[in-house]
Image (tube, rainbow, N blue to C red; front, side, top):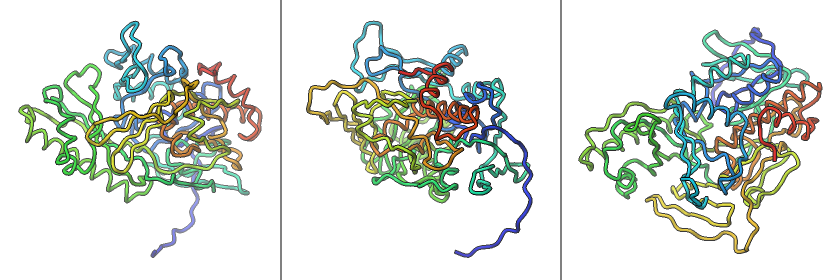
Length: 456
């Protein structure tokens, strides 16, 4: 590869803080807020024009249940619960899908206990929460490189409309999802053996309710050939009954690479246009549709992972293994989408659902015993914890998991908790003038619980 040499230059330090968070999805925002509420001086860096990441700019507008698989025991609270409560106070800020009173619907396949978010209201709430906590926000700002002194991470280089500058900090949280800071300071990067889960493009369409079986039309072999993959799920925008957030799953490639991401974004928009064409050709109300918005970022499910102190295994999830340093809980199944757009859901009750690109499902058993079956699973602090870097923590998609565990842990209500854990752990290390490896898990859990998290 041909190269050029950039001349050395002095870079201004725009801020000195206790903790800097890279990545402003909900995971990073919640890390920053938890640390700031405890008294740390915190800055957060986000490349987009708003916070929330995939949940807002990606239109992925559903958070799954905060309960175990019985729907009776709450296992998640913290800032996820706080955001839900804040949106509930806003007209049409959220729609909550709960089972009818007394209904005993099995967890497998049940679309209950979901929180359908108004993503635009959520952007405003995230802004307010950040400012209320005293966090210094940097939007339209990209992380560029780490700055090291004597082998220790001392600052991060950023770039924005004001030019190239640095934020100096004592502790750092990598919430970039692709683990950019961790990789740049020498953490081991790895990929799962099988193809990465496909990315998803979101769009908003007016007139959806007038269509006749829209998803069925998109799942025919002819339609899938035209759009280049599988049509995903749809969800109505709270308070806008005829406006649908609609998703196209595709592109099982590594979107942490610039050229792949560019191609994926453009191809996804082309596919959305083709889906609109299919409706206009085949549905009597197709010409009434109007494309009113495209997500400003593709929803990336998976790229690469960072090697931490412990890798969460598939059996840890499916058998509900307990950890003394547990910092997150969830009941979402192991959910894997293949390159051929076949979905495989493994549930904690021993059942498995395999879905075809045409929306058909078959149920089998992956366990042949009589249990007992767990009703939720846990993540340990160790899967966020680098083995050697003393002032860095990892949260979000890049945490250390194998493929099956990742299929469960990747959902937002779980990753939100990893952000909160990192924010509290960074404060614990700061408060004790120690490394992140020396944070006492019992003290971490106690402080998380005092801040509103559920610790079981």
